[in-house]
Image (cartoon, rainbow, N blue to C red; front, top):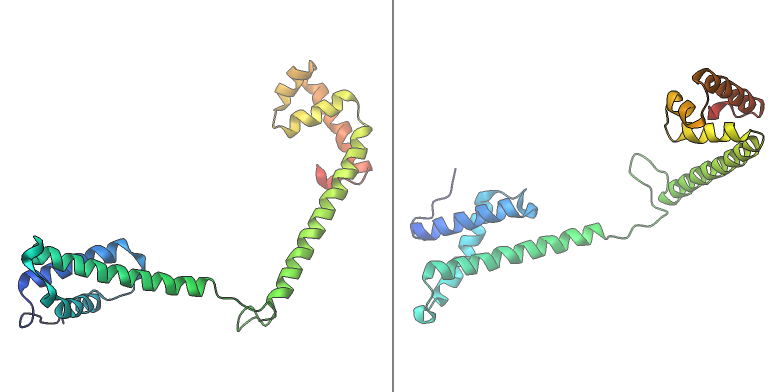
Length: 190
């Protein structure tokens, strides 16, 4: 049930406040969880204590003055909420702290595990590259070029055309390359 403001505020004051609250709720995600009526009430309360300060000597209408007062209030609220968000985003956490209530593993242990996995992967890749380099040294220039072409995604037909050999010869070369790699223990690379 909506609150009744008719005894305290004029219709235009309520309309101005509703319009601004609606605009700010749509524009600023920090207001997404706030109830519209709560924001409206906060704005109207703020206006109630500020409206007596209006003077028409500055040339602005009372509704323009109200709009500026409420925009400033809402922007102050945005700034407060963004500051709170930054505080939680930038909280420091001990590396010895558990990751969650369910998982008692310390953050530092997870980092160490991940680094170990990454290092193991790097070592494996380096070893594989060295083994491949040794195996490629045994290949003929044509076989090396065929490997490069196939690695670049060239089709068998195109590889044959680029190497000036028949497609059946390309298949024979691929068989020889596969046998050589299997012989060097690099079957998984195929």
